[in-house]
Image (cartoon, rainbow, N blue to C red):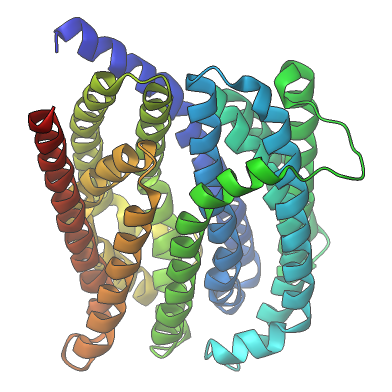
Length: 444
């Protein structure tokens, strides 16, 4: 591969991934704004209440984004293969199907809020606040489902800019409403939840209306029969494995949240706040992996196998550089970022120590994300999902097995180990694919 080819691929990856990264950062500002305003206006208990709901909300969000990850691969493969006439059918089918499913699940979640929080071992001093916050946040879940379907279609077309515009508008609305509802009207955590939901509605409406206007391919008519059986089967085949992985990952996060809650509200406030910072830090790696996946899927759909390998090679090098930069940023400044959320000095110390232990492994996570993007772009979503589940199980087992002599330090160590395990599994798959291709070529 020549330097010119490397440069061209790198430019395309940056142009595609940068809006995804910025969108991800702005999406995280939902929780950041809630936590920042609530923590500084109402104090550490309210901050802990918002943090205690994170794993429950993420269960819904991760299953949505997991499924639509598969949809974005389907859209990209259709686009690369010149079969763009399928776009309206795919979009209509999954806007209705996914939106309807999550409307039902959100309604059930609202009814089961007290039960869910008790199962999560939520502390008595914050459970009432957490209930009020969670009930309102559930209202926005169906809108997120529809948003992510349209976002998947746009990514498949190679447009990552429009979702960024939608998220930008939403983030600005959320920040303004957070300040108004919490600091101005004194609505406490319920005001933060209401701000989040209204901003999600604004985001979804903008994306649907703007994308329909900009792309004729994304227009469909509302009619009685909107589900296309063929597209439903293809979408489910690619969407269910990452959705199962994301769902199990979210359930595992609930287990880990329950585990963490046992350390008390101060540790909960510290670590959940640290994870808010961490979620921003790993976004460049996660979304660069998504960019690799989309470009690989487009080339694979067009039958250009050699280009898929070039994209992976350049993407993996970029990933290593980005992850090392994130390590250099977080270790010295992680504690200061946590302090911005209004937590006490002890909680800042706990969070800072967490970053010191975890950030050294960002390069491991980044390389695993690069290989995952390549494998999923080829349509190998099932293996990727299985490895994600195995990695999560290793993290849970290690957390409970070593807590007696490592204490809260195990939270960081267990996650770091799970990343190492994940990378080894992906490397094994790459070697297996390489040998399989050699065998097929020899047979010809």
